[in-house]
Length: 312
Image (cartoon, rainbow, N blue to C red; front, side):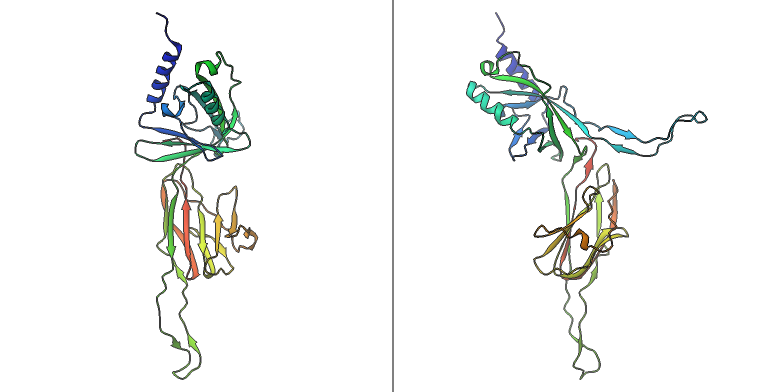
């Protein structure tokens, strides 16, 4: 008896999905659509057989020129290059040709060279890591059979992760100034018309941040008014905000070296209005003290996203 190719393919699809038991890969397109890549019922399955991009990224080492008088080389640093991603994909439908075309068209509409999407992996312990990817090509795909008749097709999608790190769940911590009411204090004697008030300025001496990632993490600071001046940073390195914000106003500082920006709540770029700017990162695998000063009754929020070399 001849083997039904569709039945055989369905078995292969189920076997591919079974390889992801305990792990949950998803793709979030630039349009916001979310695709499970391990659920056979969804019509799109990513098999780990040949999947690339989950393991260590490419490392470029910096070494001096070789010398006939020296053996070996000396390490002078490194950088992580962009990451190649390859997906072997099954796309199918058991409803009919029109349904398969609609499924295939909808999925590939999320793949654009001028846009990025997010590939996420949920580990068995619930931890999620995500990689931002851009479509490159479909390996010049050739159809051996018309998928409109068979109801399925196997593709090889190539993507590029320009930022090669898998991003963990952001860590968010906030600190607020607690205003303690003090009675007014006469400036000069009991009958003086002048009165002194205690300033609400405060140093957040106990504030710390921990980075459990594999590489340094750059903080994003959001400072909310009211305050007359503020400074935030890591260790002794600070960025000074020398201007005043009122209640409801904020300024967000992004310490990522590819950005280094300060943006107000209405989108206005105020980077040029900053005072001292000593941007600093949080080293991997360590907890470090933060430098936070605020004169006023506002608040400071730190968002730190750990970066990892692998998907789990």
